[in-house]
Every structure is written in structure tokens, then in C-alpha cells.
Length: 266
Ligand code: 0L1
Ligand code: MG
Image (cartoon, rainbow, N blue to C red; front, side):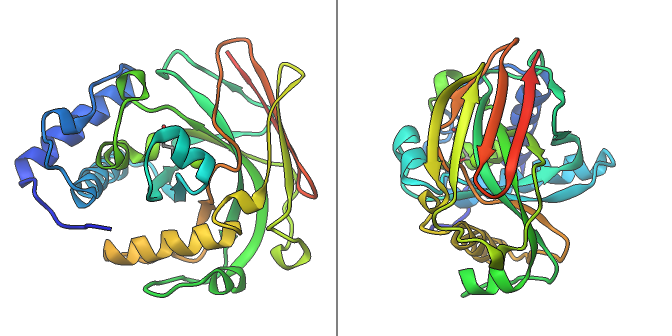
């Protein structure tokens, strides 16, 4: 993955403000590469870092990270071929069973993910799925609400990385379990919307094993000069395709062994 930087500081700040404006005012913008066709994935992460620093400066705590585009289904849906990472802040979290407002979102979609909570620091390079499992305190079921800020979902990897991997909200719940007690390659998940099954899959859709996605995330963090601290909450990537939601939709994600996570969009 090219972490080469081509944008100068002023361009990074300008693009960060454009993304932040789109996120806060819930309006769609053209992909960033329309203006900067030479923009690299490294540039995307520079914009993402500037965005995270603004969030922290507003006094919001970071809870952890998300891996994105980690399944073939998602890569195909989005026309990209490399996974990405993004940050998760406390104000993006919604508790299980809550109502999630859509007025401040552009075109939200939901996807089911296995979340990991770590008990030891993880660092790359060379972090493996086994390292992740050793450092995992517990896993739990989660739903990510993604909301690309780009018009018509037309984007490329540098743009989506700058937009924090389209992350908007996340809901965790169900039953926390010790990872070693489960087979995380074969865990079944069914996503229901208004009582109908709209997507299903098995956790192995995420790079063969969701812990591999967390290892990948740690190795990307290393390329960005960071580590994954103990106590991090990490979403390992969508198991199924993302499903669009609108006000009035009731969503429930049922995970084998891990229980279910429900929410209502208003
Ligand atoms: O969580 C993810 O897999 C990131 C998705 C980014 C692209 C999208 O908006 O669907
Ligand atoms: Mg996701």
C-alpha cells in the first residue's frame, strides 16, 4: 500500500475541513480525487489524521478503530481491492436498542461485524491473527452504520480513507464472549430489517477470520507510526454487504453464539 504523501499541509487542512463539514452537516460532496487526481492512500490517511485531531480537540474520546472493506463482498460492492482503517470516537457509539437519528446522516447503511476488545497493546509490523487472539479480552457482536459522504457512493480508496472509512455510528451489544471458546471462522450472522432477512453470512467472510482483519489494522497502524493500545474497541469489518436504512426501519443483527443487536432508525 502506498503511504507516499503528495498533498501539502494546506491541502490536507482544506480537505479535512471539507470532509468535516460534510460529516457535521450531512451533505454529500464529490470524491476528493476529482480535485486531486494524484492523491494517494497515504494522503487519505493524512486527512483522516487531521480529522481525528479535530475530534480530539473538541474533547471527544477515541474508543478504538475499525477495519473496513475486509470482505470480498464489500470490496466488490465498492470496486476497491485493499482494506482500510478508520477511527471510532465515543460520540459515534449508540447503545443496543437505541433510536438512531437519520437527519444528521446522508445515506446510511448497516453491516454486521464482530468487535474485539483488547487487553494488551498490539503493534506491527508482522502482527498476526494469533497475536490478536492472545491480546483479546473478549469479542462481542456489533453493527456499524456507514454513511459515505460522497455523492452517489462514487469514491475511490484515498477518498474513502479521508472520510474515515465512511464510519458514522456503531452499536454494540449482545453477549460478550471469550474468543478462544468460539470458532470465529464459521460464526453465522443474519441481518433482519422490519422482520425480513435482508443479508446473511459467516464471519470467515472477513479475510478468512476476523482476527486477521484486526492484525491487518495493527499493521496499517504501524505504517502510520501508531500502535493499538490495550483496552481498544475494534470493529473487524462487515461480514455481509451493507444494507440501506431509512427512518422507521427496525434492524436486528442475529449472531450465532453472540446474541443479537437491535436498533431503530428515526
Ligand atoms: O466499513 C467498511 O467496510 C467501510 C466501507 C467504506 C465504503 C462504503 O461506504 O461502503
Ligand atoms: Mg464496516
